[in-house]
Length: 177
Image (cartoon, rainbow, N blue to C red):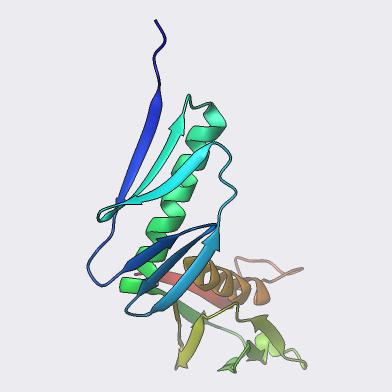
């Protein structure tokens, strides 16, 4: 007796969000539009009523993993276009007061540990950076762009060659919303 094993995941589409599936998955929402192409392998993506349906037949371990990954990416696209993503960071210094300025595509960090030349961190994609006092806020609709921009800021102020217990200066993540 042959059994057709089908693994199925469903993602509800909220009101005000439109999903189009062809070769790419396009999500349009109140905050804009995101488009992404998935190398799905044995996973089929289709739309039924107010649901995005992901299915795989006779799933192997990699197919199950790919199903969960694609589900997470599409859910993040929908969440980003309805609510957006916000990461809050704090500027910490004990030795030298550093100055942080956000431009269009990069963030400039001046006087970090008394260095003469400014350090820079790239702003990725459509992420936006706001600096207010010792708070840095990174916002956007694409979770990957916001997260990479935040990581670039942390990496730009990474301390090498000094004792990290004494030199705790830097820009650090304090909250995700």
